[in-house]
Image 1: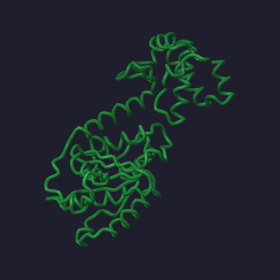
Image 2: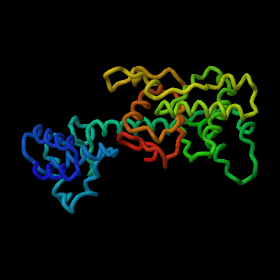
Image 3: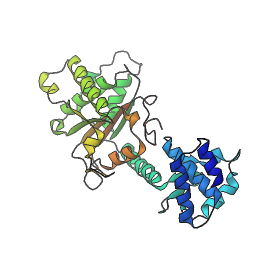
Image 4: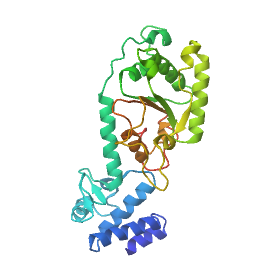
Length: 300
């Protein structure tokens, strides 16, 4: 652990990383410098916003060679392969995870694939009414986003400020309300922070006012946004939420703004809480406002 203490003194790792490395060695029942180093570095990587540690990418140049490092980790009682109940998970490509982050990533991947693979019959939607074809042969990306949202359970709309994300969403909401049975759709608006939720409400209101829609239709559009934590139902002194896989959210469509700010753990819990029939629309700019916690889900 002497080398790790020097790394801590030089600011490469933190005191928490050092203590975690010591814990892994104690649980393993042996003094293994290579295990301690890997544990400290993966702890530090997660603290810096990364989901895992890419061992081949950092091997050599002061760290052990990957060909020698991996077998030593595989022999450890605290390192397992994907799916095992071990504190550390090492996959076939040399990515080392804290167990909970591997579980979050695996769960999220499963949920996203399920959402993306399921199509919905859009029915007789009035797309031309709100997205008229201006010039033949020119792609209207807002129209394409609306078509995707109407025919898929998952839609990701990414773009910088002023690209029309909010106005596109308002038109999507109007199209959904105009469909048979659309008036009964349970729709929720959410964002990662209270400030982002307030901005979303304001943008939705402004975009709605600018559209030439019947007042009776505008009145049916949702105009209240909440934070994701409030939506999921925070349980005091717990990392769990009131809504989860076994108690899903009571909604048919969820629209989330500023999705670039959502970290891996929160996104995994959000998708687990979605009902099996619900749609999800994610809005954001993948080049801005990265999450503070580990995992840049939208950018990735």
